[in-house]
Image 1 (cartoon, rainbow, N blue to C red):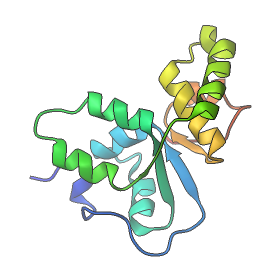
Image 2 (spheres, rainbow, N blue to C red):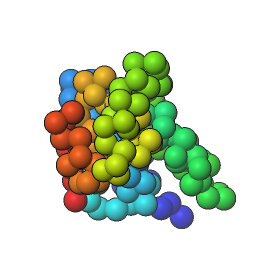
Image 3 (cartoon, rainbow, N blue to C red):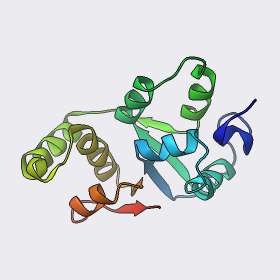
Image 4 (cartoon, rainbow, N blue to C red):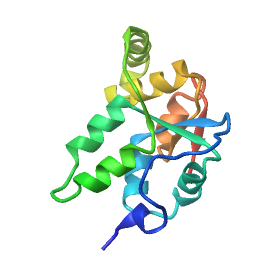
Length: 147
């Protein structure tokens, strides 16, 4: 039986003409897609249709691997294939580190700092449901917060 996002879309890489609108999907967005939560469905449908492009940070990929349950490998791989995975580099590390020095006491975590820095340096809005993160870094980068 198919679960979550697989019930509505075919498995496979997005093909066809893509628009210039690209989002960096936060980890919580991919978890919502994977679990079939309706709040992210319209955006994921746009991705599958080729109306938007989707990227994730390699940090998100690692977080998803950490939470993988037995029997989910094929579904996991099919989901990851829908996105371009952005690697970390020194520029991302420097920006994330500077934000940690600035916002650590306000509750910024390392994984969020790396993901947000990746979005900032790739000049992409960060698609997330984490309104606390968006509020904390709203002057640093563009967020698209869904509920």
